[in-house]
Every structure is written in C-alpha cells, then in structure tokens.
Image (tube, rainbow, N blue to C red; front, side, top):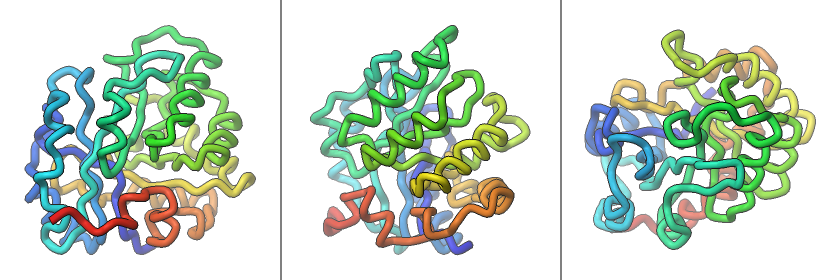
Length: 244
C-alpha cells in the first residue's frame, strides 16, 4: 500500500506531544507523504492549546518540506448529545476536523446507546470530517449504526495506528477495528488512516494499520489515504489553493 496522506497527528502544541510543525513536516516528507494533517487536541483536553491557537492558524504556510499541511483540530466529544469543545465558526475555518472520545473529557460510565448517540450527533455536524479512533472498547458502540451514519453524513471513519500499539490504553481495539472494517466493506463506506503520531518519527507510520487492513482483505479503493481524488471528496480544503 502506498499511503499519500496521514489525517491525524499532533505537534508539541497538544501538550503531550514532542515535535514541532517543521519536524513533523520533514518526517512526513521522508515517508513520501503528500499530505499531513496536524490536528491538535482541542481546549478541553488537559494541557493542550487554547482557542486562540486554532483561530490563528492562517499564519502557517500550508506547504512545508514539499508536503501539504492540513491545519486542524482533534475536537473532544463531550457528552452523548455530541457537544464538542470548539465553536462552529472556528471549526469551519479549519482545514480538517477530527472528532474523538477521550476519557478526560467524555468521562466514564456511559451506555452503548449513549456512546453511539454521541458519535451519531457529532457526525451530523457538516464541518466534522473524521471520527477519530472509534475503536476503544472502554466506550462500547453499535458499529452498524456508526457505519451507516458515516455513509449518510459523508464522514470518514478512522483506522488509528496508535490504537494498536501494545502500550495503548485503549481496549479491544483490533477486534473492534475488524468489526468496523467488515461493516465498511458491506456498506461500501470509505475509511481513513491516522498515525495519531505524537512525535515526528511516527508521522505516516501505518505499520499496524496495514496489518489490520490485510487481515480482513479490505479493498484499497475504500481507503481514502491511498487515493487523492477520494480524499478530496471528504476533505474539501484539499480542493482549495494552499494558504501562502
């Protein structure tokens, strides 16, 4: 598989990541990527950057080291109603928005129905491009509802490389990914791949992703990060000239 894009990564602005924009771009270039999304954790994640960071991203050149940068956010899904932690106006001005459930922001103890509703309501927001790591067994969901809603709303579902690391705190990730991928095959729903890199050496690292895609013989034509035309359908910013 020749990946052209990584749609989920972080710089030191996220607080618990360790590389600069320049270092991440250089690492992506070294991997042969054409596109790298820098999706910093939104303000409710402990230790991350504030609102003004996201409102000032127009100053960042979108071509660095020959790589097209997408400057965006990984917003936090805050509750079962799909509330997120950046204003709609700010989200619409970003190049890309990934929405994810994180334990410090969403909390524990929600039911499968509540978790599923949280994703469904979030996907109804037209400025949300991707659901990040919907693989975490700590937040059980109805994967058939997730996949069908992704198809209806034009939202990409993420296969997250970091979720499959042995050190990951997420639970049941490989089994959940395989369940989701089988449903995506059945309903012909595209997925995206995110390294979820928090350090430059992991930018564009899809070692674990490739294993799980191969395990279920997932069709390459449904992997948006292998096909620029398909990726542009889900990330409209790629259809616009890069800033500066």
